[in-house]
Length: 147
Image 1 (cartoon, rainbow, N blue to C red):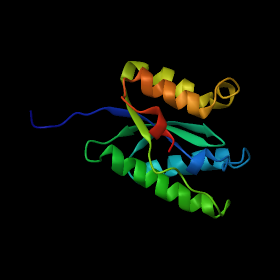
Image 2: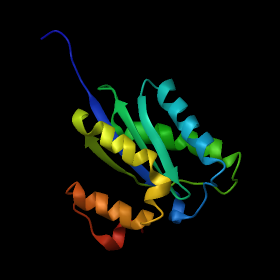
Image 3: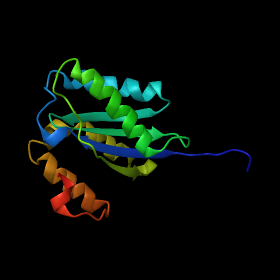
Image 4: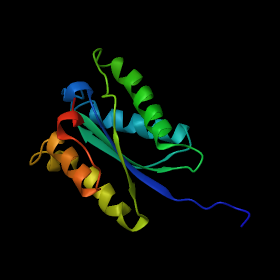
């Protein structure tokens, strides 16, 4: 086979430093749009980006030439720089979670991400994050997840 054919959809989640409420509601649409621009500037394809006052969800297509760690670093570093112009004390947490998403499940995950405001009326970021780790079979020690 002389060509490579790849479709890597990833759902990436990361929070603010110490899960502080550092993303004001009025800035959120701008931040999500800025993050989509970061993706497009680095040949990533954003599918859905949204979040809440203490975290972000990004569903995107990752090209085969780029690692997930590199993708997350690009999005977090550039969006953090932009946010510090608006919120001086802004920082993302050090880590992240990333899950592969099948093409058939992509619309459901995109819908889940687009409905974060409604979703977080019922569940905290911490509970959501732990539930997603469990759902995806990620082994973890709860005392270190948010340390």
